[in-house]
Amino acid sequence: MKRVLSSELAAHVGERVQIAGWAHRRRLLKTVAFLIVRDRAGLAQVVVPSAAELEGFGEETVVSVTGTVTANPQAPGGVELTSPVVELLGEPVRELPVELHRPELSATLPTLLDHAFVTLRHSTRKPVFELSAAAIRGFRAVLDAQGFTEVCTPKIVEAATESGASVFGVDYFGRKAYLAQSPQFYKQAMVGVFERVYEIGPVFRAEPHDTSRHLAEYVSLDVELGFIENHHDVMRVLRDVVAGMVAETAPAAAKLGIELPAVPAEIPVVHFAEALKIAGADPAEKDLAPADERAVAEWARAEHGSEFVYVEGYPTLERAFYTHPEPGHAPYSRGFDLLFRGLELVSGAQRLHRYTDYVATLAERGLPIGPYESYLDVFRHGVPPHGGFAIGLERFVMQLIGAGNIREVTLFPRDLHRLTP
Image (cartoon, rainbow, N blue to C red; front, side):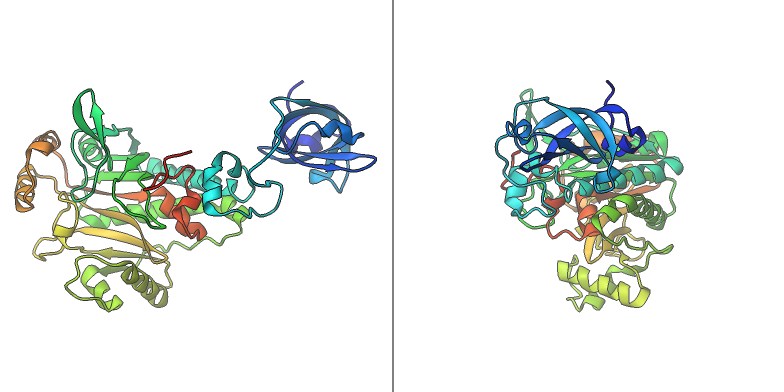
């Protein structure tokens, strides 16, 4: 007999069908018992004549039920299964770390993460990751429509990608190698092949952060595009991408009961030097502190009614070595950040694209050419003016749903303290 999902039962009233899923809840009464079965589509109620039939297993046991679909306005979906035959499809579950049938999970974050294989099943947890999946769909859809090609690049590399950031070393058949901090070098090279590329994949940062917004491994949504005039071309693409991601998450956001932000047609832009003034920060500061980012975000809401704001013109020497300086406006660069609700969501820039410029900037920063030679060689062979950006998926979702900790929106977080599950 072909399995029927809980959401399809109403179309089979009077028929004998089979459902399968998890024993979500059992109600054992004197004369009758009720079994609520959960599958990927929702809940189904099964009326069991004898409570004894449900006493041999507990909640979350995987079961198959064959029964007659009977109309009942009080049951989930307006129907229930009667005259059932219940079969266990796995070993009976005896004990759970949390009670999944309750509307809310009354557990600490460490408990949620320690028992993620179970707690992720809860109705308040699953929509978070449905939203993540929707955000990725939106990201892909916008870029595919604009002529981008998706690529997949190595995650084991010979040299650090981001200057100034720590890396995880690995033994690569007796040679020293590293887990990639980003696909930066490869996506720049691919501009010379496809002009416009993107990648969705894990990146690794061995930075000893122990905060609510940092992870050692996260999903990066990377974009690079060629034949640009300056970084504003990149920012326009980013605006479209963010709008597409937000729009695609609407169904999952409705399940979570959250209000999605409006993405303005033109996201306000403020120069880094002006951002320092808005925040009341020291004009000699080289970067925006978290408090500064919040102040700039408040300014954008008050002055432009926008929850998004671009900060452009970060000091060149404070950005990655491949960042293009702003000609005639030293020490500023064509690098930018997108702030969302007071937090840096995206970093991007126009990149250097001439070999001689790379040699000069590495020398200026006291970095050896050797480890980057294979990367620099790309720019001897014709790479157009280009730029790009990277969105941290988990940080995007955290800000979108208003989570207090990025680990709440990460399936299996990796940080200073956590390597399992």
